[in-house]
Image (cartoon, rainbow, N blue to C red):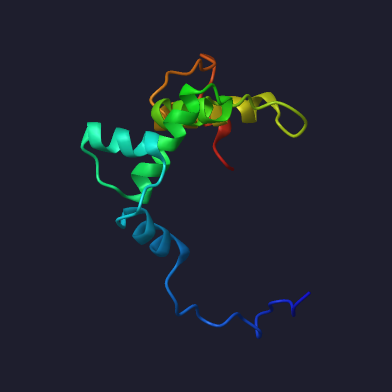
Length: 127
């Protein structure tokens, strides 16, 4: 394991391109597509031959073939992820209600959420 960072020992400044920059360039670059199904779809839909388009079409084809993970990820992308219940140790009911109301007010995924009608912001403001 390497040396631990402290107030006097800090990492050197990153000078190269970030991973997201590299990925975006690769995804938008012209790409030779070898998969015949994808090539046919590209032609019929008049789409550019890029890695990004190829990846999306592959995910769709996988979903059409019954791949549950592909189906789930497509729906998550299109409809937004299904909110997870806030349960378990560490979540007292007031905290859960407060978080639900924040999410509801923010309209994070555009879905209406059931909110406890007895909630009042004054109950959960920091002292």
